[in-house]
Image (cartoon, rainbow, N blue to C red; front, side, top):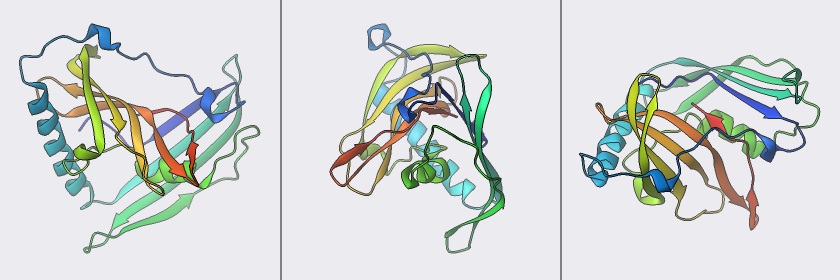
Length: 203
């Protein structure tokens, strides 16, 4: 997989979590037909994501999360960082051991428990075969990402179940290998009959 676990969110203006800059997206109007049926592409990348999730659970890896609070000139005004070793037991239980967590210097951004859950669990986003029925997935069109030709899909949960976290955004699928190589979006969920709004991330 080309995706990596280190993650940085840069929040401009720092007035609210919803003020994060958004990456360019593909408009549905640009969607064109594909040489491979769209449904087959979805099933193929979901199968690879399932294999990826299983393989990841057999390894110990270090996860670094950084949230930067920056002003309009690009100067860093606040910082949140957590470095953790992620370990999976033979039974598949996920254990997180924090190895570095300096005091946060964020001034205008408040990280809620849901934010921290997103940072630790929803990101990086993995869309496995068992997750497919939970989402509406729409093909948007082709796009070049670095040297890769990709298919771009919009992903949105069909429903927000209380206490559950979901991904909403776009994914880029390698046209040759039919595996996800990039995601851009945010975690979404519902708590106490209210929508929670969270910053966008890219992996």
